[in-house]
Image (cartoon, rainbow, N blue to C red; front, top):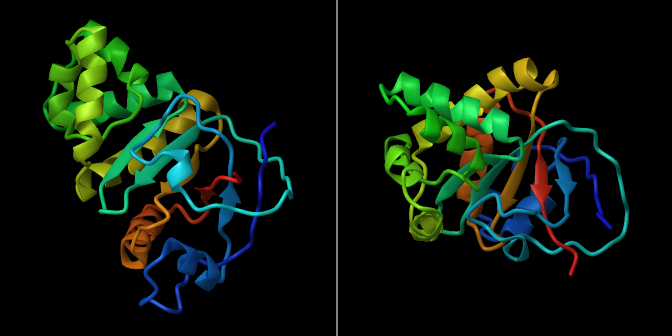
Length: 208
């Protein structure tokens, strides 16, 4: 059964020298949402087991029609994905168009099937033309890759703009942050989200 925890905090960090992500949770003093449940399929660079561990069994139901997952690894690498294949395809295709990239019909159809994006949008055509086995191998290779800050910003901005059109509701943002991530990297990500008008999000954690 899914377990969900909702904490009301602030995204203002009063102790910027805290390095463990656990310190971030303690120092936050405005509204932040914390939710933990198994992610199936995998939607980012960070495994659920790598996120902070939460002790407790307080459950809250949060209505959402689409989930946008941003993963932040301990070394600062980031990835982007959504759980709605149509939405993800629309976001990535629009970003590709903005960068002068034209996807074939076959490639465009596969954009929504990518588990997550952790490479430059310009690398997608090569990934999407590979076989299923090679495709998985390439995704595994992306464990050492990362979205640039500018491309992650583009992904977030387009997710906000396109989700209400395709689903009828704003997308909900989920952050999968490695528990060993330096606080400064976490706050940089939160600052980027705030600059895009994202002030409410879910922090993924696990309970076992």
